[in-house]
Amino acid sequence: SLPEDAVTNLREYLRIKTVHPQPDYEAAKEFLVAYGKNLTLEVDVMEFVSGDPVILMTWKGSNPEASSILLNSHMDVVPVEQVKWRHDAFEAVREPSGDIVGRGSQDMKCVGIQYLEAIRKLQAKVFKPVRSVHVLFVPDEEIGGHDGMERFIASEKFSDIQVGVALDEGLASPTADYRVFYGERTLWWLSIKAVGAPGHGSKLFDGSAAENLLKSLALISAYREEEFNAYKSGEAAEAEVTSINLSFLKAGTPSPSGFVMNLQPSEAEAGFDIRIPPSADAEDLERRIREEWAPVERNMTYEFLQKNVYRSVSAEPLVTPFDVSNPWWAVFATAVEKTGVKLSKPEIFPAATDGRYLRYKDFPVIGFSPMRETPVLLHDHNEFLNEGVFLEGVDAYESIIAALSTFDGADGPSYALREEL
Ligand SMILES: CSCC[C@H](NC=O)C(=O)O
Ligand SMILES: [Zn+2]
Ligand SMILES: [Zn+2]
Image (cartoon, rainbow, N blue to C red):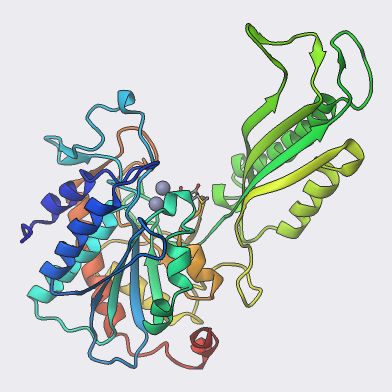
């Protein structure tokens, strides 16, 4: 059986190499199944795609009619540049300060363990949930969640568990307050391609592929600057503007010494990572792409390598209300503040999380990773979390799980639409 020590368990989980491109989900599955059973939870392992386990642990509530609480975390982590780290990224070294250094210590193995350790503490107090509490561990979030969360949400199992509210990841907070997220930007990965007549490097002529693409790059650059300025000037938060960043540029005819210099290429391509806030007009952005950034008149085409949904099934922006229309939010916020830590103003998450699959179906999702006085180091070198901060987060979830799982409401008419889906 597992040691009943939260920090030891976190460090053991961090040592499992669930790192892309070849995450060891087998080892994670073995570890997590034993962990869940040790806590006497029901453990259900689903494999919608072979090699991509989805692990659902259930702490049964006393009222099977009431909607349930879903606590999500992803098992996978992004790769590391090991030479830039001060320790092996998969050793989970604990420094004398209590900092635990490892890939996934913030994003988001910490949260998965915090959920389970909070349940352990509640069990020790003989607490009994009324609503069932489900702890979900999914694969492949970092590569889009298509074989993980996306499949799970489409499964019968997901409908069966009648989710009322879900928690998913947030970000560390450098201040004394916790951050909380009510939505996220929509991710589009765009490739634009130009074709044109090739020619001698010395010749000036209209409509070469490179010129066609360069015109687009100038327009995109101007658009980017405008958005960036709104953020720089303080007019909008980072996640409230659209970001567009170049991911690749492809053109030229290779030669043994590099590229053929006196040959104008007949094809040129550029790829962009685009993030669109829920408040922006995505349809207008798509028009811009079609008419200005990749117009047929300039011999251009475009393709989305990834195009995430922008509206929910009920045609609404993918945001979770945090006003009185969503009673779960107040229950959550009160539970957090009861631990003596404040929540800062709800924010939009700048990147993408698996929570979007739930919001797409109009389920309320609260993005939260209880790490305060901590630099934001997800996907960075030397990602770490202090053990004291980690343990304080266990207490936050203890309060949250107790409150949400006994909340006596929110199954009324305003949630009827969601229940039907
Ligand atoms: C194709 S989905 C990629 C998801 C990823 N999530 C966290 O970093 C992101 O880039 O936002
Ligand atoms: Zn994450
Ligand atoms: Zn991540």
